[in-house]
Length: 221
Image 1 (spheres, rainbow, N blue to C red):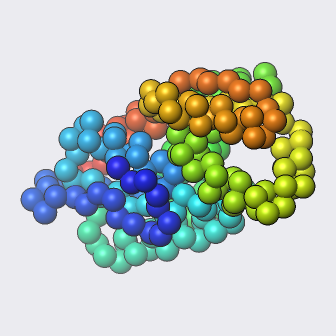
Image 2 (cartoon, one colour):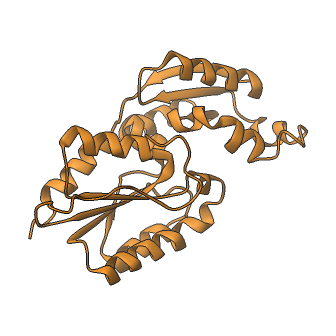
């Protein structure tokens, strides 16, 4: 499983002798581990996974254009019978959906990875109950220092911390796997941000059934 994804990367290639009906999944690198796990759990040999860097979390305005480029390249290659995008809206304010509509491609449900990991309905209720919450996933726990502390320049400008997080009350870690070391990292992140800590195991949430539904109905040649 990948520890970091800094550049565009093919993480899983369909087998050369895979059955007809090859499927491409274009995913956010922040959920690469989880998408790979679903591929392996189902034994899919006809699925190729290509990921964009997880650091795009910090520059969501770039996501739609980069996904567009991936989809255009896939269409030009003629290698795939169906394509799915493993992103939520992810802060693109509808720009990603415009790209997907132009290509006739579906994506994961919800606005972001917190939503589809928790379950879209469950996350909406959670957010309604306490909107002053900052969320972490396994990926963000692993890379909190790189993506949050250094990514937001809090390491060199600590005065930014209250500007970014002063209105939050708690940090909720939505965990995909059972890993006490990650729980401890989440707790340390909450202390650093000055927030209450809560751990909610979510598993893969809506990610697995969404992928299985799509791959299950994708044309097989």
